[in-house]
Image (cartoon, rainbow, N blue to C red; front, top):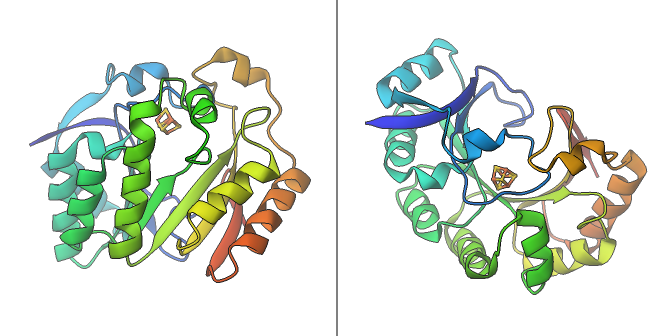
Length: 248
Ligand code: SF4
């Protein structure tokens, strides 16, 4: 079985707090977020290496990880290799994290029903009620996807041991406190909420975003406080700037 692989990181400390975590970046994505730092050809699946999953697993085991994150691109677009690798790693006692844009609720449901994911992370880029903002933040007509992402969060609510929402803060697009408040009210059942700063040092899908200034720590703190005030029972609210994590 083959995987379209974009990249591999043998150890990314911020990926799974407290664990040595390798990261597998899947090629392809169904969104074209203008702020995304992943090169467009990887999002289109071009330029990705087609690699046998046994080779990917061998690479993973060389790093002696405690945890592995599958991210992208969009990992749920390659269901068979994702499920096969997650199953095998779990059988070997390794923790599994999946970071998805939530557009494939069927795959999210399979991963959780099979109990092969310890840590599920879904990017939520705007309130579900704001289709116009979703279109801007994803770079496509997102109408058909919003309900699917919402469905994935409902499945996570019922089945995930640990469900984290990541809100990417994009200057001039979704960086108002009212948007964060709405998202938190829609997802009040999550276990963790991350306010993640937009980064553009590696370039962006829309070159105009390469010139934007990343949000300041004060802006992120204000947004994280809004999340903290709304998510009264949630275990953790964090700010992420690159690899730097700040608990609020
Ligand atoms: S930010 Fe995530 S969802 Fe958006 S295009 Fe990039 S990989 Fe896909």
